[in-house]
Image (cartoon, rainbow, N blue to C red):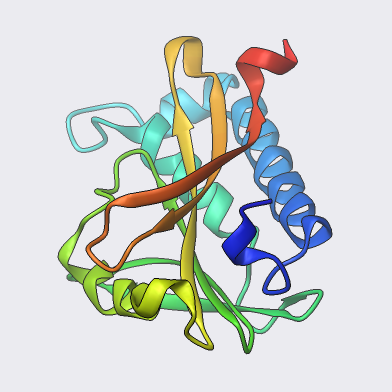
Length: 164
């Protein structure tokens, strides 16, 4: 656990989030292998169906108003109709980002302010990042940016490469 996040989020909550991400990714991979999937999503309008579909499948594993321990799940709209999952309690605001998301995107700037004052604020900001590398291997990390958006601390929560 990243020291600054202790008593703000638990290992059990992180494990529950990782479990949902892994389950949703497994289900998506299974249906994307079916012939009907390619029949429905072929052609010029769906150039990146595998990546976008996987992202959507994972976000849909976190419906609004659900809870994971004392974390409330919220749906966050940003940037021209895009949306993502947000986890909130009295001590942390945490987003679920993917490797296609910039760690310093403009819409994240207000969140970085939570991490001023040497991470001593009542509420801190962190994010879970899901990345897909070589052979579509998934890695999930917990990231704590500083007030400028630069990564201050990072912890690997799961790696398919290491699990294989």
